[in-house]
Image (tube, rainbow, N blue to C red; front, side, top):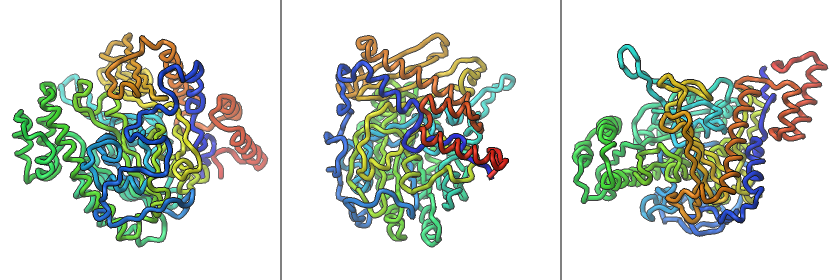
Length: 573
């Protein structure tokens, strides 16, 4: 049996960058930045960590009258795991997170019964890298997955798809839970959440048809009774593109949310989609959307944002049936239910469309964790967290220890567990939250881009203490070009004023953090690799650098000494 304990980052500790970067940023005193530790953006206007919220929208009937328990146990070793991904839902598209009060009554009720992390941010604003960061607890530059991209055949001029799959030896959430004895089922809308990227790894069943939320819930209805009837625990991943561009909501929602005054080229296309399937609507509208996007302006922005909100409202209504299904089958109160989105969406706020930048409308997303029985429901935590934290959190909540499992490689978590904060056993401390976006990338590091040259776009955002630093590398395919920005999210929540030049002290600390992040990625990639087992000397170096604790180091060395005494090597069990 293959051992996987050669390098397992402890849940809740994370990498060196997670523990040392706050020191770098605060070394000169965070107070002079104009944003103290408690000054994180706070759309709800409430305390940083509190037991109750005020955003319940009275959707009890829609959700079947789910109860809420004020407290409960710290872990749930017999619970199932249900992960719901509402692709492209930005945080302010949910009433409980500052959106219109009537846009999401079902989600708002779910939030009232969940632990809500109001300042969650994605590791990447693209579907494939973000979801893989959720699935592996690692940064996109570590796991290697990017959205499907396209190269051009030099001889024919034809486009061909390029897939950046999950690097070998990196276990996924499904592989971990399958190894722990869970039944694993993935019901998805496919697209960039596909088998080629590695998303199906570990799933006993994985669907990938673009069908929309109603059909996805029908699939769940066909599968949930079987999951409820079995003896062992299960992990269900449920995903929909219903909210995603090109925005094709049912007409009754469209008419309520899209501006009636709009009379541009998109209106006729949208009105001609009635009666088609979700996939057919998607195909027709997508063609029009991409063909004319360069000519869109503020009228289109308002209209498209209205269609987007209509998709949120439509999805919210459908979710009532999903939650009712879980309740009827006795699963809602026997499962940890994590509801999130992989990224947000831009509507020309910063001159672009969809999710191609690192502004807050693309990065800040919902993250809600409903514990069994509604335990600790209503707690709202405003300290910023990352979607990298999802995997270590559910491992802790469900008492699953990856180091004891037969996995394709070591579990290397770059997030931290939020489990103790969720149950009120600790208060989160602010830490840097890092997001990144790669485009036109042919590989990692200095590997060629899709055009055959060494250039690519790599944007890195570092959010800390109410400030956000953005580093844009190789922008515009100019290998020497760098753009850097610094925004005070407390005083400038829409990120209109770049204060990088005005705050050289704080800018310097962010640049130091950026350099440490890049060096950390390079170090771990070079020393650990995808399948590497550390030598004793390398393990000691990791200890000195802070990647592993002294306790883990001693435990590993004891295991190695015992194995050598018995004549066993690292790959023997």
